[in-house]
Length: 409
Image (cartoon, rainbow, N blue to C red; front, side):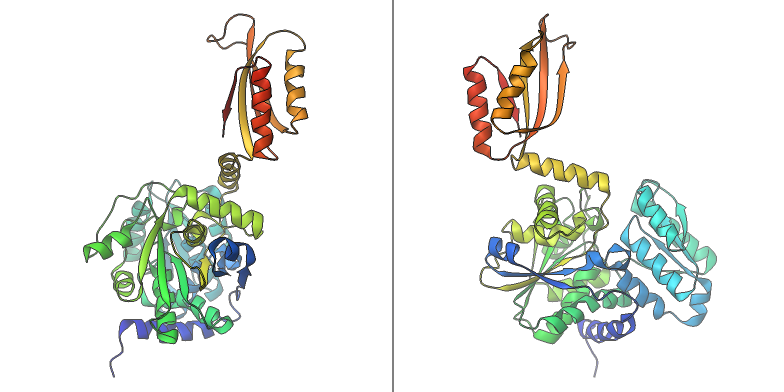
Protein backbone atom coordinates (compact mmCIF):
# COMPACT_ATOMS: atom_id res chain seq x y z
CA UNK A 1 0.00 0.00 0.00
CA UNK A 2 1.36 3.37 -1.00
CA UNK A 3 1.23 5.85 1.89
CA UNK A 4 0.54 9.54 1.41
CA UNK A 5 3.09 12.13 2.54
CA UNK A 6 1.27 13.08 5.76
CA UNK A 7 1.04 9.44 6.86
CA UNK A 8 4.73 8.89 6.11
CA UNK A 9 5.59 11.94 8.21
CA UNK A 10 3.34 10.67 11.01
CA UNK A 11 5.04 7.25 11.12
CA UNK A 12 8.46 8.90 10.93
CA UNK A 13 7.50 11.24 13.79
CA UNK A 14 6.69 8.23 15.99
CA UNK A 15 10.17 6.90 15.26
CA UNK A 16 11.70 10.33 15.87
CA UNK A 17 9.99 10.49 19.26
CA UNK A 18 11.64 7.22 20.26
CA UNK A 19 15.05 8.34 19.00
CA UNK A 20 14.85 11.70 20.77
CA UNK A 21 13.86 10.20 24.12
CA UNK A 22 16.65 10.86 26.59
CA UNK A 23 18.46 13.15 24.15
CA UNK A 24 16.28 16.24 24.44
CA UNK A 25 13.89 17.50 27.11
CA UNK A 26 10.33 16.26 27.22
CA UNK A 27 8.85 19.71 27.64
CA UNK A 28 5.77 20.33 29.81
CA UNK A 29 2.23 20.92 28.57
CA UNK A 30 1.08 23.75 30.82
CA UNK A 31 -2.57 24.67 31.43
CA UNK A 32 -3.12 28.42 31.83
CA UNK A 33 -6.07 29.60 33.90
CA UNK A 34 -5.35 33.22 32.96
CA UNK A 35 -5.31 32.68 29.19
CA UNK A 36 -8.28 30.34 29.44
CA UNK A 37 -10.26 33.06 31.20
CA UNK A 38 -9.26 35.67 28.61
CA UNK A 39 -10.10 33.51 25.58
CA UNK A 40 -13.09 31.60 26.96
CA UNK A 41 -11.48 28.27 26.08
CA UNK A 42 -9.16 25.87 27.86
CA UNK A 43 -5.65 26.91 26.86
CA UNK A 44 -2.66 24.59 27.10
CA UNK A 45 0.87 25.64 26.15
CA UNK A 46 3.61 23.27 25.00
CA UNK A 47 6.70 24.97 26.43
CA UNK A 48 9.40 24.39 23.83
CA UNK A 49 11.14 27.52 25.10
CA UNK A 50 12.41 25.16 27.84
CA UNK A 51 13.91 22.82 25.24
CA UNK A 52 17.66 22.28 24.90
CA UNK A 53 19.12 25.18 22.88
CA UNK A 54 16.02 27.17 23.89
CA UNK A 55 13.79 26.16 20.97
CA UNK A 56 12.12 23.25 19.18
CA UNK A 57 14.56 23.28 16.25
CA UNK A 58 16.91 20.78 17.92
CA UNK A 59 14.31 18.03 17.43
CA UNK A 60 14.35 18.09 13.65
CA UNK A 61 18.09 18.76 13.43
CA UNK A 62 18.97 15.83 15.66
CA UNK A 63 16.66 13.41 13.89
CA UNK A 64 17.88 14.46 10.44
CA UNK A 65 21.50 13.90 11.46
CA UNK A 66 20.59 10.59 13.11
CA UNK A 67 19.10 9.42 9.80
CA UNK A 68 22.20 10.27 7.73
CA UNK A 69 24.23 7.35 6.36
CA UNK A 70 27.50 6.79 8.21
CA UNK A 71 29.54 7.84 5.17
CA UNK A 72 27.71 11.16 5.04
CA UNK A 73 28.20 11.74 8.76
CA UNK A 74 31.98 11.48 8.35
CA UNK A 75 31.92 14.44 5.96
CA UNK A 76 29.99 16.55 8.43
CA UNK A 77 27.05 18.89 8.04
CA UNK A 78 26.52 22.50 7.05
CA UNK A 79 23.56 24.79 7.73
CA UNK A 80 22.50 28.40 7.29
CA UNK A 81 20.68 30.22 10.04
CA UNK A 82 20.58 33.43 12.02
CA UNK A 83 19.16 31.81 15.13
CA UNK A 84 17.55 28.67 16.50
CA UNK A 85 18.27 26.29 13.61
CA UNK A 86 21.96 27.17 13.92
CA UNK A 87 22.04 26.17 17.57
CA UNK A 88 19.94 23.06 16.95
CA UNK A 89 22.26 21.76 14.22
CA UNK A 90 25.36 22.64 16.26
CA UNK A 91 24.04 20.74 19.29
CA UNK A 92 22.93 17.74 17.23
CA UNK A 93 26.23 17.52 15.35
CA UNK A 94 28.17 17.73 18.61
CA UNK A 95 26.04 14.97 20.14
CA UNK A 96 26.69 12.79 17.07
CA UNK A 97 30.42 13.56 17.18
CA UNK A 98 30.56 15.01 13.66
CA UNK A 99 31.82 18.39 12.40
CA UNK A 100 29.38 21.21 11.66
CA UNK A 101 29.76 24.48 9.80
CA UNK A 102 27.05 27.08 10.38
CA UNK A 103 26.84 30.06 8.04
CA UNK A 104 25.26 33.06 9.74
CA UNK A 105 24.62 36.57 8.41
CA UNK A 106 27.08 39.20 9.60
CA UNK A 107 24.11 40.92 11.23
CA UNK A 108 23.35 37.94 13.53
CA UNK A 109 23.32 38.86 17.24
CA UNK A 110 26.62 38.15 18.96
CA UNK A 111 24.78 36.16 21.63
CA UNK A 112 23.51 33.68 19.01
CA UNK A 113 26.91 33.46 17.34
CA UNK A 114 28.56 32.66 20.66
CA UNK A 115 25.84 30.15 21.58
CA UNK A 116 26.32 28.32 18.27
CA UNK A 117 30.09 28.24 18.74
CA UNK A 118 29.51 27.04 22.30
CA UNK A 119 27.91 23.87 20.93
CA UNK A 120 31.11 23.12 19.00
CA UNK A 121 30.25 24.34 15.50
CA UNK A 122 32.47 26.41 13.24
CA UNK A 123 30.68 29.67 12.45
CA UNK A 124 31.18 31.42 9.12
CA UNK A 125 29.79 34.95 8.88
CA UNK A 126 28.63 35.85 5.38
CA UNK A 127 26.25 38.42 3.89
CA UNK A 128 23.70 40.64 5.51
CA UNK A 129 20.56 38.49 5.36
CA UNK A 130 19.65 34.79 5.60
CA UNK A 131 19.48 34.34 1.82
CA UNK A 132 23.16 35.34 1.52
CA UNK A 133 24.11 32.86 4.23
CA UNK A 134 21.98 30.15 2.59
CA UNK A 135 23.76 30.49 -0.76
CA UNK A 136 27.16 30.41 0.96
CA UNK A 137 26.18 27.27 2.90
CA UNK A 138 25.24 25.52 -0.33
CA UNK A 139 28.62 26.46 -1.79
CA UNK A 140 30.41 25.01 1.24
CA UNK A 141 28.35 21.83 1.04
CA UNK A 142 29.28 21.47 -2.65
CA UNK A 143 32.98 22.07 -1.98
CA UNK A 144 33.35 19.84 1.08
CA UNK A 145 30.80 17.09 0.48
CA UNK A 146 29.11 17.95 3.78
CA UNK A 147 25.36 17.42 3.99
CA UNK A 148 23.25 20.57 3.94
CA UNK A 149 20.67 20.52 6.74
CA UNK A 150 17.64 22.45 5.54
CA UNK A 151 15.79 24.37 8.29
CA UNK A 152 12.32 23.14 7.30
CA UNK A 153 11.84 21.56 3.87
CA UNK A 154 13.01 18.02 4.65
CA UNK A 155 10.90 15.01 5.68
CA UNK A 156 13.16 14.06 8.59
CA UNK A 157 13.26 17.65 9.86
CA UNK A 158 9.46 17.80 9.65
CA UNK A 159 9.12 14.44 11.40
CA UNK A 160 11.46 15.56 14.16
CA UNK A 161 9.29 18.62 14.80
CA UNK A 162 6.26 16.33 14.70
CA UNK A 163 7.57 14.59 17.83
CA UNK A 164 6.15 17.61 19.70
CA UNK A 165 2.65 16.45 18.77
CA UNK A 166 3.44 12.88 19.82
CA UNK A 167 4.26 14.20 23.30
CA UNK A 168 1.20 16.45 23.39
CA UNK A 169 -1.13 13.54 22.57
CA UNK A 170 0.45 11.41 25.27
CA UNK A 171 -0.58 14.10 27.77
CA UNK A 172 -3.89 15.27 26.29
CA UNK A 173 -6.22 13.45 23.92
CA UNK A 174 -9.48 15.41 23.66
CA UNK A 175 -8.21 18.45 21.77
CA UNK A 176 -10.38 20.72 19.62
CA UNK A 177 -7.83 23.20 18.21
CA UNK A 178 -4.05 23.28 17.78
CA UNK A 179 -2.48 26.67 17.05
CA UNK A 180 0.98 26.68 15.48
CA UNK A 181 3.14 29.50 14.15
CA UNK A 182 4.55 29.28 10.62
CA UNK A 183 8.05 30.23 9.52
CA UNK A 184 9.05 27.94 6.69
CA UNK A 185 6.30 25.52 7.73
CA UNK A 186 8.27 22.60 9.19
CA UNK A 187 6.78 22.86 12.67
CA UNK A 188 3.13 23.06 11.63
CA UNK A 189 3.61 20.36 8.96
CA UNK A 190 4.98 17.88 11.47
CA UNK A 191 2.40 18.66 14.14
CA UNK A 192 -0.52 18.59 11.70
CA UNK A 193 0.60 15.24 10.24
CA UNK A 194 0.62 13.62 13.67
CA UNK A 195 -2.59 15.22 14.98
CA UNK A 196 -4.70 14.58 11.88
CA UNK A 197 -3.51 10.96 11.56
CA UNK A 198 -4.16 10.31 15.25
CA UNK A 199 -7.32 12.26 16.07
CA UNK A 200 -8.83 12.92 12.66
CA UNK A 201 -10.11 15.95 10.79
CA UNK A 202 -12.43 17.16 13.57
CA UNK A 203 -9.36 18.69 15.27
CA UNK A 204 -8.68 22.07 13.68
CA UNK A 205 -5.10 23.12 12.93
CA UNK A 206 -4.68 26.88 12.72
CA UNK A 207 -1.48 28.48 11.46
CA UNK A 208 -0.21 31.88 12.56
CA UNK A 209 2.09 34.18 10.59
CA UNK A 210 3.35 37.72 11.25
CA UNK A 211 1.57 40.40 9.21
CA UNK A 212 4.98 41.34 7.82
CA UNK A 213 5.58 37.91 6.24
CA UNK A 214 2.37 36.04 5.33
CA UNK A 215 4.10 33.79 2.77
CA UNK A 216 2.16 30.60 3.50
CA UNK A 217 -1.20 32.39 3.63
CA UNK A 218 -0.42 34.13 0.34
CA UNK A 219 0.66 30.84 -1.24
CA UNK A 220 -2.45 28.97 -0.12
CA UNK A 221 -4.68 31.75 -1.42
CA UNK A 222 -2.82 31.76 -4.76
CA UNK A 223 -2.95 27.97 -5.08
CA UNK A 224 0.82 27.84 -5.62
CA UNK A 225 4.03 28.78 -3.85
CA UNK A 226 4.60 32.53 -4.05
CA UNK A 227 7.55 34.60 -2.86
CA UNK A 228 6.84 37.73 -0.86
CA UNK A 229 8.87 40.66 0.40
CA UNK A 230 9.16 40.05 4.14
CA UNK A 231 9.36 43.15 6.31
CA UNK A 232 11.19 43.30 9.66
CA UNK A 233 9.37 41.93 12.69
CA UNK A 234 10.08 41.06 16.31
CA UNK A 235 9.10 37.52 15.24
CA UNK A 236 12.33 37.23 13.25
CA UNK A 237 12.22 33.42 13.43
CA UNK A 238 9.13 33.47 11.19
CA UNK A 239 10.57 35.71 8.48
CA UNK A 240 10.96 33.65 5.33
CA UNK A 241 10.06 34.79 1.83
CA UNK A 242 8.35 31.58 0.73
CA UNK A 243 7.38 28.18 2.12
CA UNK A 244 9.07 24.94 1.11
CA UNK A 245 7.76 22.47 -1.46
CA UNK A 246 6.99 19.79 1.15
CA UNK A 247 5.64 22.19 3.75
CA UNK A 248 3.37 23.92 1.24
CA UNK A 249 1.93 20.55 0.21
CA UNK A 250 1.33 19.43 3.80
CA UNK A 251 -0.14 22.73 4.93
CA UNK A 252 -2.44 22.81 1.89
CA UNK A 253 -3.79 19.39 2.82
CA UNK A 254 -3.87 19.54 6.62
CA UNK A 255 -4.16 23.09 7.93
CA UNK A 256 -7.69 24.47 8.31
CA UNK A 257 -6.92 28.19 8.45
CA UNK A 258 -4.08 30.71 8.69
CA UNK A 259 -4.31 34.03 10.52
CA UNK A 260 -1.83 36.87 10.86
CA UNK A 261 -0.77 38.88 13.91
CA UNK A 262 0.86 42.28 14.29
CA UNK A 263 4.04 43.06 16.19
CA UNK A 264 1.93 44.88 18.80
CA UNK A 265 -0.10 41.71 19.36
CA UNK A 266 3.06 39.62 19.61
CA UNK A 267 4.63 42.08 22.05
CA UNK A 268 1.50 41.94 24.21
CA UNK A 269 1.71 38.13 24.28
CA UNK A 270 5.39 38.26 25.27
CA UNK A 271 4.62 40.52 28.22
CA UNK A 272 1.58 38.46 29.26
CA UNK A 273 3.66 35.27 29.20
CA UNK A 274 6.36 36.92 31.26
CA UNK A 275 4.03 38.54 33.76
CA UNK A 276 1.28 35.95 34.14
CA UNK A 277 3.04 32.65 33.35
CA UNK A 278 6.64 33.51 34.30
CA UNK A 279 7.60 32.28 30.84
CA UNK A 280 10.18 33.90 28.56
CA UNK A 281 9.34 33.68 24.86
CA UNK A 282 10.89 35.18 21.75
CA UNK A 283 8.67 36.87 19.17
CA UNK A 284 8.26 33.77 17.02
CA UNK A 285 7.62 31.70 20.12
CA UNK A 286 4.72 33.89 21.27
CA UNK A 287 2.96 34.33 17.90
CA UNK A 288 0.48 31.50 18.41
CA UNK A 289 -0.59 32.81 21.79
CA UNK A 290 -0.82 36.32 20.30
CA UNK A 291 -3.45 35.04 17.86
CA UNK A 292 -5.48 33.64 20.76
CA UNK A 293 -5.22 36.69 23.02
CA UNK A 294 -6.09 39.07 20.17
CA UNK A 295 -9.27 37.13 19.36
CA UNK A 296 -8.09 36.23 15.85
CA UNK A 297 -9.04 32.62 16.64
CA UNK A 298 -12.34 31.89 18.41
CA UNK A 299 -11.76 29.11 20.95
CA UNK A 300 -14.69 29.78 23.29
CA UNK A 301 -15.75 26.51 24.91
CA UNK A 302 -12.92 24.60 23.18
CA UNK A 303 -9.78 22.87 24.36
CA UNK A 304 -6.81 24.43 22.57
CA UNK A 305 -3.07 23.78 22.49
CA UNK A 306 -0.55 26.34 21.31
CA UNK A 307 3.21 26.01 21.00
CA UNK A 308 5.59 28.37 22.77
CA UNK A 309 8.22 27.43 20.24
CA UNK A 310 11.29 29.28 21.53
CA UNK A 311 12.68 31.54 24.23
CA UNK A 312 15.86 32.89 22.67
CA UNK A 313 15.03 36.56 22.84
CA UNK A 314 17.71 39.22 23.02
CA UNK A 315 17.53 40.80 26.48
CA UNK A 316 17.82 44.34 25.13
CA UNK A 317 14.87 43.72 22.80
CA UNK A 318 12.94 42.18 25.69
CA UNK A 319 13.54 45.26 27.84
CA UNK A 320 12.28 47.51 25.04
CA UNK A 321 9.19 45.37 24.54
CA UNK A 322 8.41 45.46 28.25
CA UNK A 323 8.74 49.23 28.50
CA UNK A 324 6.76 49.86 25.30
CA UNK A 325 3.97 47.55 26.42
CA UNK A 326 3.77 49.18 29.84
CA UNK A 327 3.46 52.57 28.15
CA UNK A 328 0.83 51.23 25.74
CA UNK A 329 -1.17 49.81 28.64
CA UNK A 330 -0.94 53.20 30.43
CA UNK A 331 1.01 51.66 33.30
CA UNK A 332 3.88 54.01 32.50
CA UNK A 333 3.38 57.59 31.35
CA UNK A 334 5.62 60.35 30.03
CA UNK A 335 4.73 63.85 31.24
CA UNK A 336 6.18 67.05 29.78
CA UNK A 337 5.72 70.56 31.11
CA UNK A 338 7.48 73.93 31.31
CA UNK A 339 8.62 75.57 34.53
CA UNK A 340 10.10 78.95 35.44
CA UNK A 341 13.82 78.33 35.90
CA UNK A 342 13.84 79.30 39.58
CA UNK A 343 14.70 77.41 42.78
CA UNK A 344 11.79 75.45 44.23
CA UNK A 345 9.61 75.13 41.10
CA UNK A 346 10.70 71.55 40.33
CA UNK A 347 10.18 70.53 43.96
CA UNK A 348 6.60 71.79 43.90
CA UNK A 349 5.88 69.87 40.68
CA UNK A 350 7.24 66.64 42.19
CA UNK A 351 5.03 67.10 45.25
CA UNK A 352 1.97 66.89 43.01
CA UNK A 353 3.28 63.59 41.60
CA UNK A 354 3.98 62.25 45.08
CA UNK A 355 0.43 63.09 46.19
CA UNK A 356 -0.91 61.15 43.17
CA UNK A 357 1.32 58.18 44.12
CA UNK A 358 3.16 58.12 40.79
CA UNK A 359 6.57 56.49 41.07
CA UNK A 360 9.21 58.42 39.10
CA UNK A 361 11.46 56.25 36.91
CA UNK A 362 13.36 59.00 35.11
CA UNK A 363 13.44 62.78 35.09
CA UNK A 364 15.19 65.27 32.79
CA UNK A 365 15.43 69.06 33.16
CA UNK A 366 16.36 71.02 30.03
CA UNK A 367 16.92 74.80 30.10
CA UNK A 368 19.03 75.03 26.92
CA UNK A 369 16.53 74.13 24.20
CA UNK A 370 16.50 77.18 21.83
CA UNK A 371 12.73 76.74 21.43
CA UNK A 372 12.25 77.71 25.09
CA UNK A 373 11.80 81.28 26.18
CA UNK A 374 14.63 82.67 28.31
CA UNK A 375 14.14 81.88 32.00
CA UNK A 376 12.15 78.70 31.38
CA UNK A 377 13.02 74.99 31.52
CA UNK A 378 11.32 71.91 30.10
CA UNK A 379 10.81 68.97 32.44
CA UNK A 380 10.22 65.46 31.15
CA UNK A 381 9.18 62.79 33.65
CA UNK A 382 8.70 59.05 33.11
CA UNK A 383 6.62 57.56 35.90
CA UNK A 384 4.83 54.37 36.89
CA UNK A 385 1.07 54.80 37.09
CA UNK A 386 -0.69 52.62 39.72
CA UNK A 387 -4.14 53.37 38.28
CA UNK A 388 -5.17 55.36 35.15
CA UNK A 389 -7.61 57.48 37.15
CA UNK A 390 -4.78 58.71 39.41
CA UNK A 391 -2.98 60.08 36.34
CA UNK A 392 -6.17 61.75 35.09
CA UNK A 393 -6.66 63.47 38.45
CA UNK A 394 -3.00 64.55 38.52
CA UNK A 395 -3.20 66.13 35.07
CA UNK A 396 -6.42 67.91 35.97
CA UNK A 397 -4.85 69.18 39.20
CA UNK A 398 -1.73 70.43 37.43
CA UNK A 399 -3.74 72.28 34.79
CA UNK A 400 -5.89 73.86 37.51
CA UNK A 401 -2.69 75.15 39.11
CA UNK A 402 -1.38 76.72 35.92
CA UNK A 403 0.80 73.99 34.42
CA UNK A 404 0.73 73.23 30.70
CA UNK A 405 1.02 69.44 30.66
CA UNK A 406 1.51 67.05 27.76
CA UNK A 407 1.03 63.33 28.50
CA UNK A 408 2.25 60.52 26.26
CA UNK A 409 1.43 56.88 26.65
